[in-house]
Image (cartoon, rainbow, N blue to C red; front, top):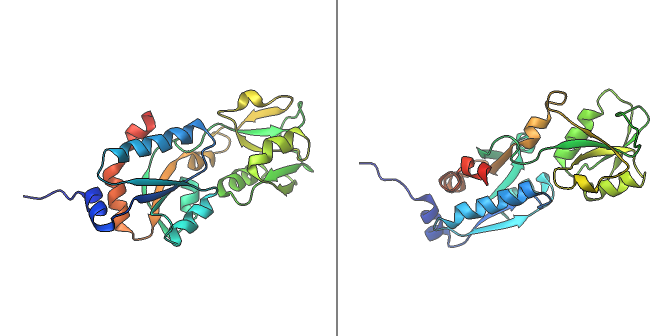
Length: 222
């Protein structure tokens, strides 16, 4: 007769500390719901969960490498950029981000044109990736920005445009051109929308606890 191993209980007894996860800063209801769902699922188990909210997928991967956290939440795109980590679970389409739009300062704008100044945050791999994708084939000037300030920069004409996720704050956008980006036109968006849970490569202990704790279908319903 086989005996099921209670990995969360083993972690609690052996490590005597919480399991530490690194999540993005909570700037959307989608991510807030995901954080709540993760905590709810861990609350059912005999292991404590500590969540740290860190800006930038690169910073979260670095925390894994420095053993400052046990697992991290990334987009599938960011996870594929990091060969030093293992993907434990994918949570499904549009679990990480959705509803990207192109924001243009010109209220009568029709899209990206040569000569434009386009905001890009190189510290965020997902943002940099999709901005470069929509500007492909255009001769534009990339202006390095902090994505937290991008709406303000576009509204004030400091830059001509950038990419933004407006699922929770669309009502604040006035006097700008807002062009939804579709996956039919930009298939790259699919990988940006899938949330993944990752660990440092070969960390079977943490991977086993996550696999025991996480119900991806339930998370998508929260």
